[in-house]
Image 1: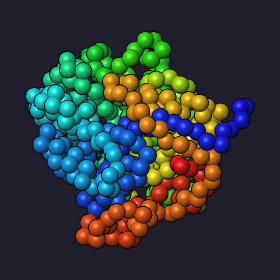
Image 2: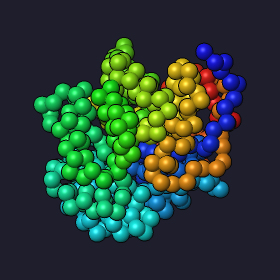
Image 3: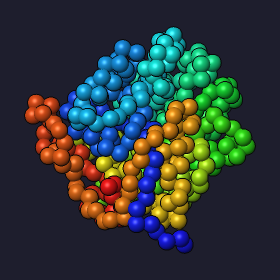
Length: 363
Ligand code: NCD
Ligand code: ZN
């Protein structure tokens, strides 16, 4: 195996799937994303969800005003598809550069998705419009039928919905978000190898690090619960192979999804892992272990913008091979939060990799 370098200069990465939330939580978590990532695709699953151009503009300006002073960061906004979203509103937002993409949540598939799409047939006109204007469709790919085993919902979605959808709309540009299974990784890879350039997938750090044992290690561990739920080890291995393959159809999307402590530590704990603070270091561990550090830059900084048709960032970050220990929670003191906007101290989200030592840090 090639020797591990003592530092690594990367074109600055972007995060192609993140939940920045709103209000006090936005204030708390935004600096963690903005310190590393130049841009991020911002998920629209607020309450109420972002379904209009005006709502997206207002949310974008709340994000920009929550940035630490002088911190550059570009939020790329998305529209939340519902059964009755007007295709004209979507097209206007896309043409005006407000919406970068639209997000499909099957109704009730995940956090704040109750207003999502109940049946793909109901949004046929929207999908047709998106296809004709080349607006990317971002999919939470899980069936919602409670009879389907939760570990099988992604694979079932591909067979029952994604493949038929792509047949109906062959020109639609699609990102299958946060893939978690071998079936998804193989499907995306094979379509790419067959010459398809309209399909891609994001992969999270936690799905590269965890298998489903993590949720039950010595007790019920809600900090490792997210959706789509982490799967068996063979699926994790397939995701590592995909992420480190160098194929441009796989790129970085953290799905960083913070919840207040009371939301995680509850009889019915929320789905979502907050990984933004150490995301790039977390990916670097996986790429190093796979002997593929030379492919990290493509995955983190090049494949995403190329898929979206956006320029690559021209500045860089430096990863240094120096150990850092990860604290249990985001430290309120480290951020620039005014007292009235701040989260209650006991509500700060737990960090992914809490208590671990990571071998890389950002200089
Ligand atoms: C996300 C959230 O909390 O908004 N949760 C998660 O487990 N990933 C929603 C989502 O992306 O499914
Ligand atoms: Zn998400």
